[in-house]
Image (cartoon, rainbow, N blue to C red; front, side, top):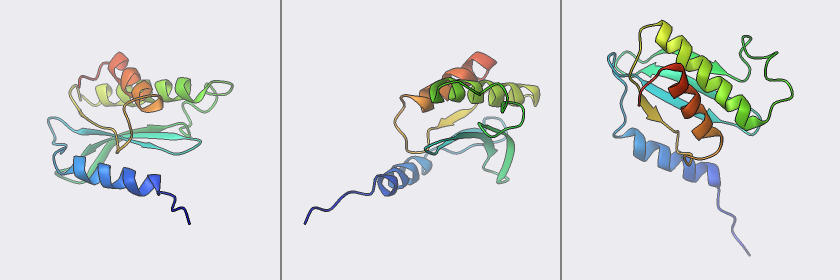
Length: 122
């Protein structure tokens, strides 16, 4: 019998391994990415307090109308831009990028590029 590997369990292991070293502070919070099959979520987190400073997703009301008819990569770029703008508006300039155990390619890379375009540095 062939055993199929659980890719999400492997991703969670990678994420925990990275999270041992990646920590968001008030001066340099963590930009976290979560990617589902149909949506993508990004949030800026201060791990010292355990609070979310700002967040954006493909389900955000600000983006809902503009994302119709776009590919998932274009939607991810727009989410990155929105979370970057919200963070810059709150006075956050530098962040630590937490890709959530995903490979830095495709939609994860597009979120990062959108956030950089909006003014975040990482």
